[in-house]
Length: 388
Image 1 (cartoon, rainbow, N blue to C red):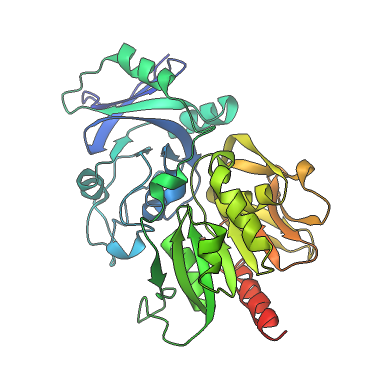
Image 2 (tube, rainbow, N blue to C red):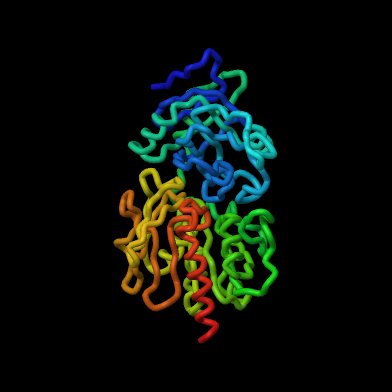
């Protein structure tokens, strides 16, 4: 089956799902063909941050909000140096930007960075298909001539291996260690460097977003970032006051093959540990729990999460296709947060150590400040340890 587009122009882009379903539209950004898993994101803002979030490696994002591109792009909002998501699907073609911070148009930005977009799509129908069938494997092609080999596109989608068993953290992590001191954006100065001395934190980069590192710096941390492959010995050689486990893409069980032994070694040192997203899943695996692949995952900036210990409900930003199986949490590990959408696990902590993590993204500020306390909790744990 295929969808019809309400335009007299010849379609220049085609999206082929592995089940043979076709969507046609108008291409923008870079020409060519890309193959990936498809997810949908319900956020109304932040498309640039989403496209540059390393957690979206191996995925094409369908945006449910139609006005994508209307605020343009700028260098300050990148979460990493270049887009990581494989492509984007939108309802309406990106318009000329209207925002005082814009320095470029979305289409040009994507084209220069080798990422493909497609507009003119019934994204409601596509989103419903993802919800009902699970995250599909797809092939997205953009050809200005409008000529497509449909059989080849469907074959490519069907040949895609998927994200289960795939370690993508190694592809998006930093090549070598570096120091981070930039703090959160504030009017009117923008981003400012941290100059005071603070807690020495080692951040393990499984695909870290820049704004997470900024939040750590703003919470009083001197941050040293290490690659995902760092060993416990390499982490502890920095004599840290605490260890942070970042977000990232792919199957946590695959990344856990080398990350879990590192985390278990760090835990033996009785240091405060804080994890976000993939870091949350890595911590759970290191403590003896298991992770599972979700049907279509959680991707958006409007997800309600309940703190089971305080009763507080936070509006959170999420981006994950795998989840911690709360039924497998061992004795001594408490479930602290749950999704109010589906009851899935969104947070854990050790009962006897300052070790905790959350599935959602507190640095993304959809609340806008509902979850920043987690960074302050991490800093307070390091304060308590320093005071004996």
